[in-house]
Length: 317
Image (spheres, rainbow, N blue to C red):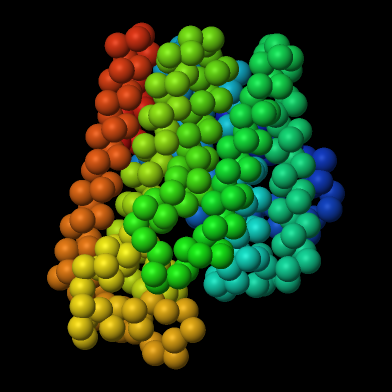
């Protein structure tokens, strides 16, 4: 019940920022499309299971017992995430369902730019929720800092992460910057809007980082088991491990399968089986569990300080 109520309120908050552009039907529809793409994790599509869009609300509620003051930030982060995904699709050019593929790069770029501006407006609405000016400035700085880190991670991803010779440490660093930083940000600002207890804010921020790392590695494993990352030749943790641990024909086949410029079309089932046999999936699962354990330790610490973390535990299931 709580999840449905918070999801409804978040969707209403997001919709309120779209109303000024609703008369421009085509732009409005493109914005809605961006917000409902599955990889954006919007409240409308991801309300079952791990409710990622609600994370700032749940962190805020865990500390203060209230979450309404965090609704503008939850909306802002959804708008920023959607903008990033549109830009990501333009840069990667690997999705037939993307706005850039269907409508062209120009309209996609304008859609993403509009989402960025709407996100800034959402942050400004904190004033109407009774948040003091100096806190709003800090929140804005935190969000801009984290998303700057995400942009650096995206740059590194575009420039070197597709290289099959990338090592594990570099890959995890990029993952932390590009993916985990956004979840870390959601937790930090959610906590900041609820308390000035720096220990509690830091504890939940670190929880967010580890949760983000665990989530991305889970995606890496799923990308291999479902075959999508094999078809798209996406170099992720299982691939990096397998290439580093093999030699001979298996090593050569894996490098050929994931080399972007290769004309060889890998059989997803064959490559998936190779990655399982090399222990790559098992190793990645262990790394994922490590980050989950780190996240669990942090919310246990937050609980000992006084936070009610029961709803946050859902993200570790």
